[in-house]
Figure (tube, rainbow, N blue to C red):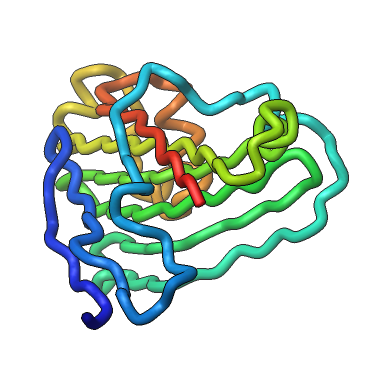
Length: 181
């Protein structure tokens, strides 16, 4: 057998990739049966993520950025932070077309390393994934009293904070990945 491709599936309108086969040439590979993404009510532990633990690794990488020929901004970035108690990853896509619409897709992955130690199951890892999707037209922003100055939405980080504070529609999907070795 060879390395498996994937098939794209949708969960509440948000694309996902499924593992379709494993590499049978590698006895140490994780079998398809041991990987299970499931919808969950369990949410990211914000207290854990906001703790002031010493950071062992942090990096932020801009994967793509465009000013859309001076008609807005589009960007894709990833941040990773590792502490003794957890690792956290944020993948953020941001699109702002001046006077037309804003679109945000944020995927957060977190693994609470304390959980694994507490359960004393060295063969089991749990990763939580939260995906937030937001899209609004300029008229929708205006109707709900949110700022409509295009300059307000140029920076994805600042725009995310502003939109969080001002409310508005956000579609959230929480999933859990359990890997058993």
